[in-house]
Image (cartoon, rainbow over the protein chains, first blue to last red):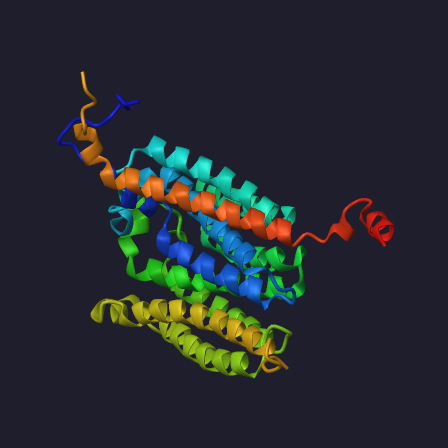
Length: 311
Length: 58
């Protein structure tokens, strides 16, 4: 059978990589890693095949919600410099295709996670997809400067899902990992908003920098960082923590706190003078911050398997 | 009329078709592996009437 509704010869034909780009591969990396850590830090062991399949379906679910987000946000993505190259605004993929891929993969990932792991994990994945695609993308993002704060929860659910895949239930430790990502998201994105300054203005997205000003954003970054530091270091004394985690957290949180303090101290003239060097550095550090915290939790969990690690 | 070997659209969509084909094949393998693991790891005592059957066989 031949598809007759094709693009005319000579016009760009969407390739496999274009559809893959709809799924926000970089966000998927974070989802896969944190969900994996959540699953391996749990006290129950998972069969490798079931664990692999479950994490894969969580990643597909996250990718599907990314596709739905790109479908909904195509208009503002076309305005913002950072997102102009995405598959829909650049014309490589049609919006309808993104919607179809997002809906189909969402359904498939939830059903398959339910079959591979358990219904609670599947329910949490469905909730996460709806939270990101509907609650955050369609409502919060364009309605309130708290979009990043509340919407950050969507990115924080994967370790909880990972934990549920292994145990079939919720626990305090899973919610601590959730809180770590939840509290990390605002300073991470606000630092980005500081040096990608005109993007959100032009797209009329009510980021804190637009609604409350840049001075207020700097204060918010410091305040959230202080809360994050308390939480991240405190986690070191729980059952998912241990000496390695605590040492890692000690160094990272000191650096993060210094970075946030320097951002708070600076004004726009300072930042303009060195092209937002401190803000950019803080943003790069924030990526390592999350990766290394979860890496340390994973290391503690792995060592615990050999009678080492943990307290 | 014989079957024409390749339409122009097949050339244009080669990468896409290949990707979808490989993904579907990987999905089939994954479902097979999952099924195998689930079946071989079932504790039949957990199923309704499982304990009764075990006692009878003793």
